[in-house]
Image (tube, rainbow, N blue to C red; front, side):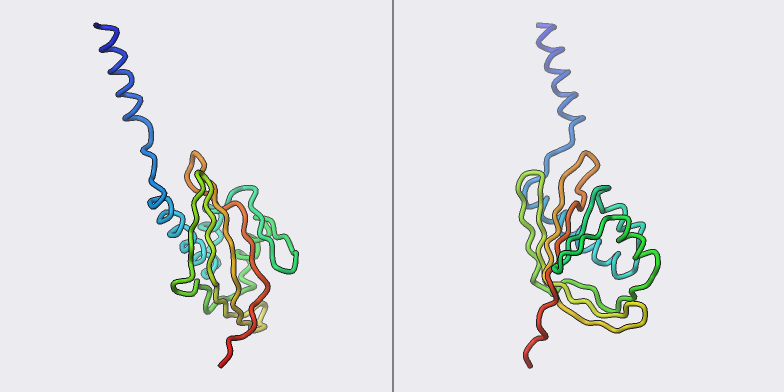
Length: 153
């Protein structure tokens, strides 16, 4: 009897110490908010927030085949070469898909600003891949399409 009570007490203690598992919908909301936070950090050239969200092995793959590693992306933010007026997901375009400990965010992104004084404006699709780690969701891989043609008027 004492052994059963001790075993039950031990199991209860383990269960209360273990983190609660999120539902897929909770994961979707968490990853969605994290990706919006990341886009806002890029808009502000906030390398500290970007670095907190990015995995150490992060890479960004552009539509033209260019691969940008984490540190190059953070150095670009710190330099302030790009100044964004607009760097936001188009409303209603974001989709978050969850597969266990992996999440993929897709959305249409609208960018407008200057790069070393040269103006730019473009829209593109991106896919951002996140993985659940012991420290929370981390952004591990970004893919950005080539710029889309301007919208027809």
